[in-house]
Length: 487
Image (cartoon, rainbow, N blue to C red; front, side, top):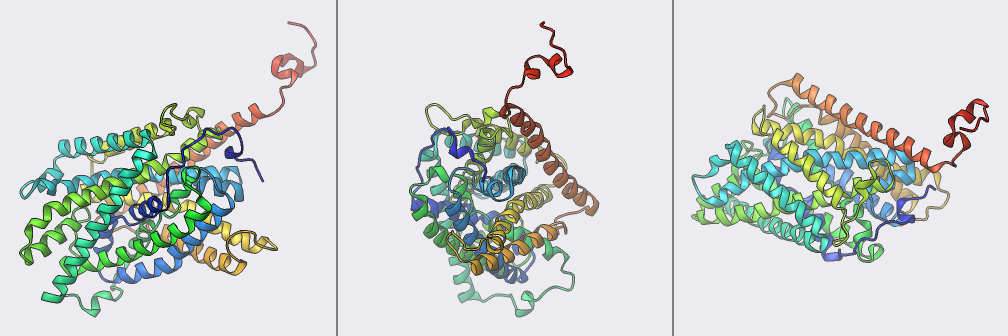
């Protein structure tokens, strides 16, 4: 087993996350209301996709996280796990895809924040979401604020995550509660036919990958493994509770959108539109503004959770010398990986600005989301592959689960993940140009994976050179050619 950066002189991080913090972190990271409208837009058949994904992807994910966190505790999560099980390059590729996915995902969160927050200003201000100057300033301001809070430390940043989780609970509760009242008073236009597979299912196929993407997040806390209080006891229960809550909220929110506005869902503002419409029917229009505020808080928590968690990947990679070493710098006062957080913020800011150039907002959102799905699911290929490897190669498993459970969970998760990656290459209904979409998807995937190989082998070669003994020819190259002339 190769030595990890955790076994060497690693900078000390503060253990600030308790069980309650972890449960709230899982909810705010896993249950992302911003992906629900784009999924619900494909109709009632997506409910079956949710249930399938919960059984074949989400349950195995929880087992994989608990098993791998037990075997390989420490900072780095998906990076550390793939490295220990499959080797250095696979570890770096897993961590790289996890990090760069968030470079694409965080800008979609900023877009969603802008689309929702304008409702806080009251009726008549919704058009501001289409104002590029307002949208860019609001997005970049939130991004800078979340970066600053995470640099101050998880002791501060976790409260943004926790407030985001509370906002998510309240927003989901209001949404689902209104849906139940509307259903009981007015019924619904949804019929059994809406839950059947449509004659042309190509748009639904994309939803399966997005659903798998929506269900990731249980691994996020393990990326911050050195910042969890008593992780061996705290993590398993938090994973189970956070997973059950998130799955129930997803299905409830999707059903409510279908009851409220059917398939004609705006992928950015669909949640607020549904609440506004249902509240109007019940004479409770005043709910729209506080609901938009709660949802905006939830979105800020989502951005903070993913930004703070994913920034630990380049931090650990910097310690391993596969990326510039300064990415492993820890703030002298706040004990946080501030260099990695700043880089994450700068790159995400650049992508936020690019979002306002070219295609329409909804199409841009969908393209960024689809490519993020591919990159996000790559680490899960390694996670589930590790379970299968343990089950097949170990005579007596020494982790949390037995051979049968690991093999079933690993194989189910692995096949589902590969299928989710493949299906997301089918365009969603918001896409107007098929060839441009496929060029974006194939080109983006090749670009990011190729860039990972470049970083690994450039810095990996330098690391190997630094690690081998210093030879005479390193000091005097002429000695390599057989000459003993003294310079």
